[in-house]
Image 1 (cartoon, rainbow, N blue to C red):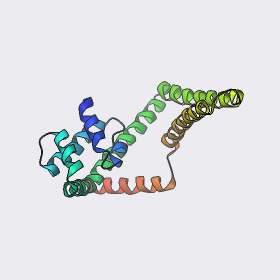
Image 2 (cartoon, rainbow, N blue to C red; image 1 turned 30 degrees about the vertical axis):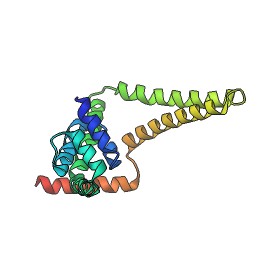
Image 3 (cartoon, one colour; image 1 turned 120 degrees about the vertical axis):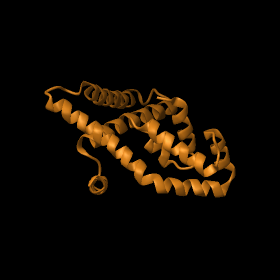
Image 4 (cartoon, rainbow, N blue to C red; image 1 turned 60 degrees about the vertical axis):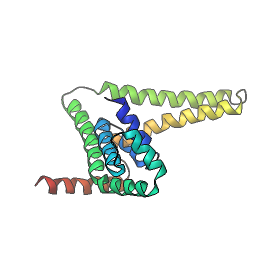
Amino acid sequence: MSISIIQAALALAQFTPKIAKWLSGTKAESISKKIIDIAKTVTNTTNEFQAIEKLKTDKTTFALFQQALINSEREIELAVIKDKENARYRDIAIINSGKRNKRADVMVISAAIGLICCLCAICLYRKELPGEVVGIISTIAGIFGSCLKDAYNFEFGSSRGSKDKDKTVAAILNKRDI
């Protein structure tokens, strides 16, 4: 995976934070290339760093970049959803073959243990710890809690709105495949 391409795409996330969300998963490199191509086309540059500089200084070009991303958003979102779908199918295949997904089990157990350790440290040593340390441990506990939330969302699906969106995207994909 080319780090410089992903770093350049993340640099473009300063203009549209949604880009950072799109760059998770196995499709990060291909999505990064698409975003960088959009930026280079809109800014009429050959280099992603020149494109970033032009977007910083030219408000008209920035607006065109935003519009181009909105026009490409459907395609990018479909790639992100396909990536998640593939991960779920992989897990289903592992379970159907009679095996356990040890990597996922280790991740969930590690997040749960980390959260419990943070909470215990705060409860047991709160009076002895400076407020800054309690704040840092609380932040770390929040990260572990977020990891558990993501694991549950992956395993059981996320909110109802997200499920509705998944059904809509699936219907769109089925129409395109016909």
